[in-house]
Structures are given as C-alpha cells and as structure tokens.
Length: 265
Image (cartoon, rainbow, N blue to C red; front, top):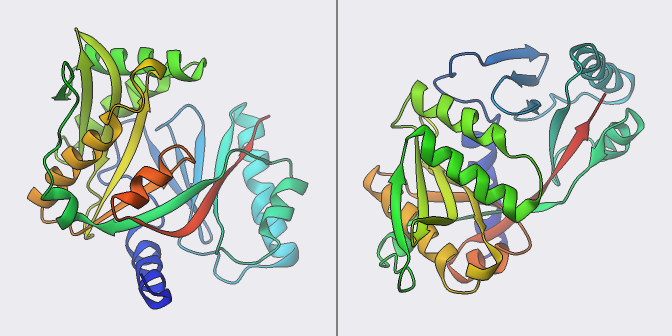
C-alpha cells in the first residue's frame, strides 16, 4: 500500500465509521450529543464517547467539554471510555484527558483491508473445531465464560450488550463461535454499520491451549465471507498486538492507532 492508499482508507474510516453509533439504537440505550461529542449509555458496562472530529475545539473550550463528561459520569457512578485515535486533533488531547482523570488502556492498531481476497479463501478451522453462528442467550453466556477464562475479569456485559444488538436488528450483527467437543474455544462477531461499505470485526479471544492453530484466521475469513454476501467491500478491526500480525498477513493495512482513555469515578 502506498501512503495515498493509507490516507484514502483512513478517510473512508473517518467518514463512514465515525462516530461509532449503533443503528438502530437498541432498547435501553441512549445516544446524546454534547457539541461534536456523542455520548452512548447503556450498551456496555460503562459509557462510551465517540466523534468524527472535535470541530476544532482547543484550550479552555475543550477542557470544558471533557469536564462535563467527567461530572456526568461521576454523578452516575459509572466509568466512561473516550476513544482516542492517534490522528485526532488537537495534538494535546491525550494530555488534557489525563489531566481530567482519564487513564489510557492498551493501545490497538486500526487496520483496514479489502473483503474480496479474504472472502475467496475457505474458512478452514483445525480438525475437531466447528464454526457456528449463534444468537441464543445460552451461547452468549458461553462466550462470556470463555472470555472470562482468557482475561480473568468479568465479561457479563457481553451477554446483555450483544443480546441488545441482536434484538434491535439481527441483520446488523452476526456472532460466530468456534467449538471443540462442545466447548467454546474462541468467538468473534461482525457488525454491518448502516449506510457504509464496511464490515467491522470484534472479539477473537481464544483459550490459551487453542492458540496458534489457525482458529482466529478461520473466524476472520468466515466473517469476511458474510461481509461479501452483504455487499461490503472493506473490513475494519481494532487489532491487539496479538492479532495485528495475523491481520496484516491477511492483507489488512494499519491506518492509525486507537487508545481507550477511561475515567472511573
């Protein structure tokens, strides 16, 4: 990819996927606007702050915008994530978030690539592993249990969060599990944002004993085929350092990084 291609992909990402607002909005989820900022409450364990850009806000005006979010979530007694991309402006935004009490978590790499080559590949899972699309509460609970084993932290929010999205529009998201002997060993989901050419991939956690067997790759290609069937031409992933090399080998290109800045009352 040339620099121009990367810039083109980043522009498509900014224009089509940001701000990240669920459409349709699931029951029990609120979407509020505060200037250029979009505040989403009720979809995850905490709140979520997203935007296309900050409309040129700097200095005291930007500090006031940040302070309003801190005050609101302090009053709610709830954490909130501000999703900061590397190319966001102003350049001192991360410093201002930290000064307001937001703490950076692990940085991820935003990768984008064409659907077609991946959709043409067969999603070959290792012997004894089956890929299956799921919607039931029981299966979502099995996914959360698998992720809790991987990450050693509560993942119950996945159950009701994914269930809300499926209930709001089952065509906007597809959840896929990888099973071996009746055990969920990995899982991922693909979202189809409305009025875009993108499909976005999420999840992908895999039990330690099942890693390096091609399961994550199989989940990616399976979901790419779903995206192709829906007429989507681009895939986007917020990639961890574990998944990024795999996705780059599959043809996806780094276009920026993203860091969750989390405020916890």
